[in-house]
Image (tube, rainbow, N blue to C red; front, side, top):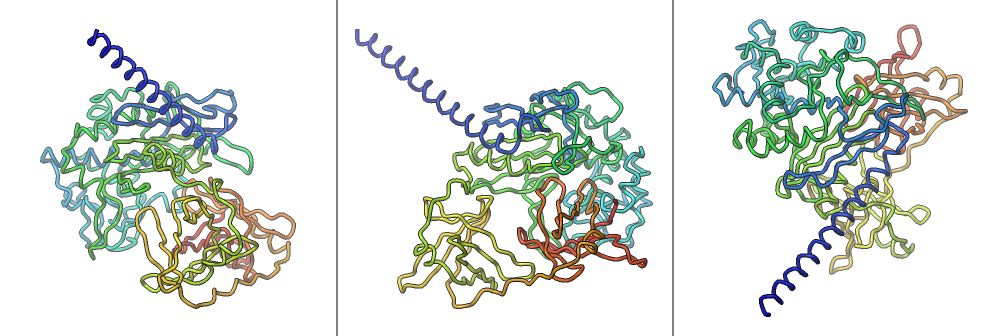
Length: 554
């Protein structure tokens, strides 16, 4: 009887445990559904997304359309161009060859490409892998869009950029660079005597059964290929044609969420390279001066709600992608989209945070705050390195402004836990009073936190705007190419002028002079540049300390 009772108790425990786990899984599925469906609707280009825990899928769905013209819904089996996630495969291929004794990452590239003009500089494979070579990125050159439809061999592609002046000396700066990965692909071909395409397919795809992954082609029939799109105002257009010989080892691969889980599982299991090699690829690297950068070889370090891991995104004509792996939690999130129109990185980050039980706060959950409570925290705060941030109260709402060039106000939202978050939920303030009654705050980002002491200082004066006649504004209307597949579209409505960047909402810009405009939603400026004939032929975007020219293409 006692044995029978124990069996019944054990059975009841198992049933209760199963019910609990089932409910937990259903709740998680609902939470992820809400995150993804908030951005991707059923009637637009969409997303295929997979979440895995301990190497096994726990969420796998697709939202939106694989083909708008044929009204075909997306499914997880759809094949997407993965863009720069390709760089992971190229980097691992290089590390495989190093482990085989066929190269060393500290080798100079002229050992394998003797006629490459290095201008007397020592450029190594390491510099190519972590984007510190200083070589001109060919996708940022004016000629790139003109040749987007032209098939090229790797050597023809290298000829496009090899004689361009270098941007900086090797190892001095980090600047994301597709040319470096073109050279890496060619080095793989020189060493192996095979094509990059064949090497990846034979040594990676076939080895782990990535049967729905390909070196991309615009002419071959690829089962379950999702069509690529780009936004045009409130509508969509078919993506511009791009010969997939051009992204080559920097971005030409195609895959599915299922195959990319196989890839991540193989990386975690050290199937292709040893853990010591992987450590170099995922843990960032350093510049010549010892400054650490987040990018290693084909991956960049990430920190999501305190969980550390590595990730990479991709963007190519008609597609955007992002994959995140959190190491201690053993969680992988991969999102593949068929439009250059929305922020897939934001989605995958929010999903990853939710899966590990540390959801990113959402401003929709903000609480009401009395004016008296809000007033307590108004004022200036001084952080290390003389950084000053101002908290201001306007119409019952709190705003944050950091002093400096192109500073702007960001609304901050009060949460139940006492924090005040910014729009994306990953940055926050925690205010408090010291024992002697002075204001202080802790400013938190995904990676760090900083303490600021309350000081007496008035906020900077708001930027003044002027009126510019509609006739002059109309001369600025057009499309300006900041980089391949990233366009700033300038439009005019009445007396107002707007800027809309690829994949982003339309924002009004405000005139400080006849040619200098600034945005209020982000700390950025746009200057319209005149040609010798007096027409507007380009603009310059000043943001984040960088001045980026954009040529007018329409």
